[in-house]
Image (cartoon, rainbow, N blue to C red):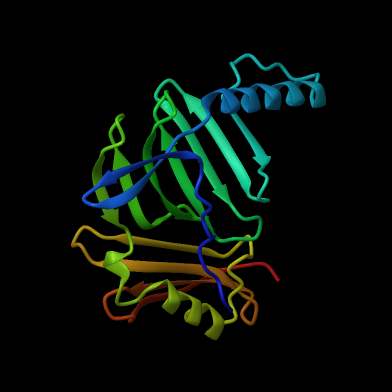
Length: 209
């Protein structure tokens, strides 16, 4: 089993120098985003004429030119764009200021935990914060989770398989994996100490045959 984060294709933006390194500043085409959101609403109204759409259009979903599934939303504070490959477990997250300048970027796992390097920028494009979301899990990383899934015949693409990770109140990092154990017709829920890979909890809950 080999699963990796999707390969990112650099979007349009401006190049600038910072600390002698070239930094790519992404820029969202807000006019195109607004057009897509409006067209999506018009499509919904045609498909569901019996429904009342009282709120203004704020979101849409589409397939981009590279075949990625894109979810786009807007609010008074800016635009949110999330993109991932059709069969990928990982996607890219981008949040933009109302003027289209990049505010926050990172990667996420489909069950919503953040991974990789997350960056935050001010409205002028200056990097103000950078966080390595994977750092607490280096000793028992995603690659270890893949090996764990292979060992236990876990299909990570199955709708009823859930993977999460968290840090508790004592600052200990954990992985949590839940899936249907077909041999026992039950949900199996495992909690793993990410500092050493030790299973600290192994539970079964009733499932359906």
